[in-house]
Image (cartoon, rainbow, N blue to C red; front, side):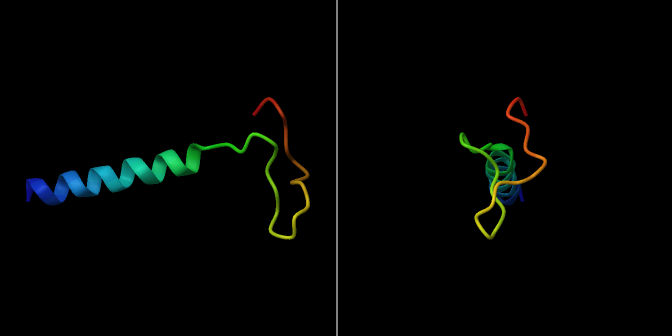
Length: 42
């Protein structure tokens, strides 16, 4: 049980890290256009 919890915790930490990663240039939509609500300070 403890081993499964540790694996789950590592998975969740990786997922959070990936979602918080902000691109250096800007956010892009799927068609390659810049996101209209993009703010450089965010």
